[in-house]
Image 1 (cartoon, rainbow, N blue to C red):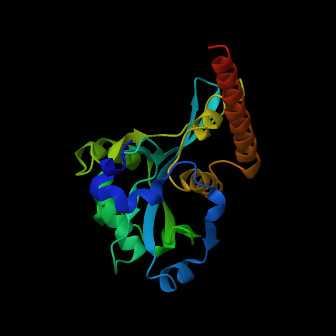
Image 2 (image 1 turned 30 degrees about the horizontal axis):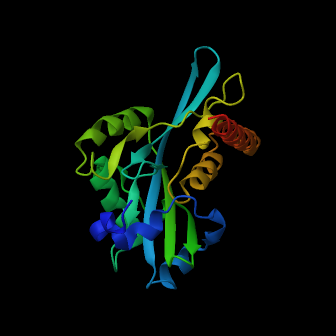
Length: 231
């Protein structure tokens, strides 16, 4: 792709590069992230979820519904975005939630109490803030429908995605296969952390899913290389 195809988005390009090492993102205290890095670019994202006690096909516990989305850049992430200069990170999140999923802030406004983790990337002068909020299953379904009315639907966000929170009989399909997708920034790590903190999945279940996902990715990589050798 030609350099000039970025247009006015060029100044944001470095924040979303695929394949950047996650090792460059270090956890940082929320208070420090807000007060000591005012010159850095800040971004806030949030996970809305609901618990679901159904057993699907009499086989798999649904566990819950998590709201993620397909982004404009072709990767999976949580609703949210860049915080404006002088804007509080949680205020920026609520503004982005209105724009991207048409969230009714009179009912579901995020607060500092919903904060989960912040990450600092010195190389990019970037601070990421992540929050989570629980709603009822009925409220969750209503949010999914209302997403279609969001101002940024079809522009920044290309549809809601629910990650499957179960692993199927082959040990790959379900959550492990979902975790093998491309994610924006630290969204994959944030998802795993929030699932654990919300008690939707145990640490042991998550580690098994992550290991299976890694094995699946490695197998796909080997198979692609072998196919190319025979072309």
